[in-house]
Image (cartoon, rainbow, N blue to C red; front, side, top):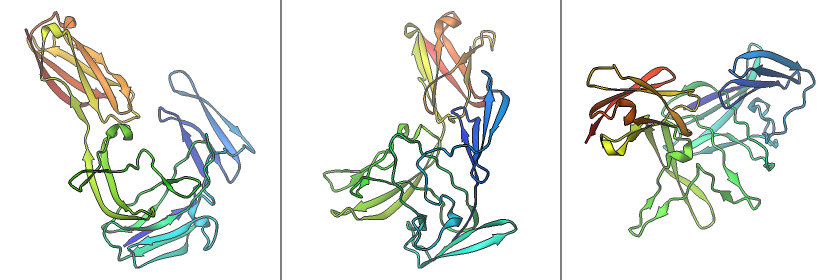
Length: 304
């Protein structure tokens, strides 16, 4: 059984790339609050604007699900592989909303609500969802966005890819972590069969846990002069990755704190220059810290 409750969200919060609150809109009072920060990111002022202009992003019709009405231009209920779907109004104190309830769903099917909107070019998308899960057994809650062209045909996006049909009849798809900002965590893949008329049916589902990891050489030669350590799956909100490194000859007498460099979303690199350690041979010990929190330790052997 899946039961979810939607409650109105009258305020939209917009964050910058560093995860700090830039501004917020309140659609009930038509106010906008701007947050001003200094070069260090510290809040120095906030400005409240009345009768603010609502941003012209691509938006849902009746974005709050509690405004749902049957046969409206907004939300449409869907239930694949479920015996029924019930949508009922509810009230809890001052909160009003709708409850969705589905039962006896088959494996790898779903029920819920959705709607189609016309996309305006060169406009950002704002994703926001708030659910109060009352009961969820043997199921998951997910938000999907599909893209279609003017003819109503499904358009492949970076998180929707076609499998490769091999000569032995198998279909193969390789998940490239770079297409998902090298994020660590649960990767969920649904497999759909598509016939010649573009009809789709989900036939399987799988989950893989992608863990944070480190890539480096186990040993290097002195004439290579340096070696790199790559850290994968770093949270996009991380401010810094540090790699204190020292030789094991006399403990930490030559420790140097190497500052990692972000080379792409989720991937940081630290470069150990052997000349910084008098080109010594032996064991080089590195500890990795992400935002001052210890992550892993590694040893590289340097040989002549």
